[in-house]
Amino acid sequence: MRPPGIILTLLCATALAGPGCRLESGGGGPPQQGSSAATVVSSGDGPTKILVGFYSLSGNTEKMATAVTEGARQVPGVTVTQKPVADITQSDLQSAHGIVLGCPTHFANIPGEMKTIIDHWALKLGVNFTNKVGGAFSTGGNFTGGKEHVVISLLLYMLNNRMIVAGPIYKPGDRGWGEIGASATTGRDDPGLRDAELSDARKLGQRIANVARSLTQ
Image (cartoon, helix red, strand yellow):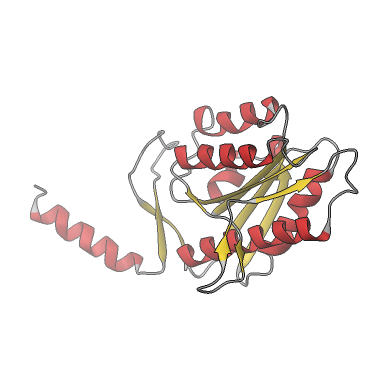
């Protein structure tokens, strides 16, 4: 049981923080993996920051990332940073309230290079992802090339890092539905990114931005 003085201090800190503040683990040094200590890091007065990270070889996944960015920017009070995952910094990750990741399917899985990069974010950089909002998208050569598996794998990565995940919403309301992410078929026999696929990516970006914004206000 905490002494009365500590309880009073905690109550005073809560009152000063106010309902508009977001709580997230932190401290004097790099956050420890799995840490649940909470400190005030942002309030509803500032912009909600969305980070869109992608891994792209042919350019198709980058185009999907750009559509995700366009969707997120439709939400008032949101700023978006779009970068290849190899260029994302520790500061980018720590300051983001929402993170959307996308990649092509390599043998029906996340590309090995990207998997190594994102694993290092928590293991080597010590980034604390707790309560950040996450979403995912993928591209692949054929309809059954593993795109959904890649999206789920990215979401599982986020869940294991204590993030809150969300997907795009179609026809908002009681009769609408949601999906796990966005994807596009981009094989040799495919005409390329279709408007409907880019629209799905915009819906994903908009949903992640809306959820993240609601948690930072």
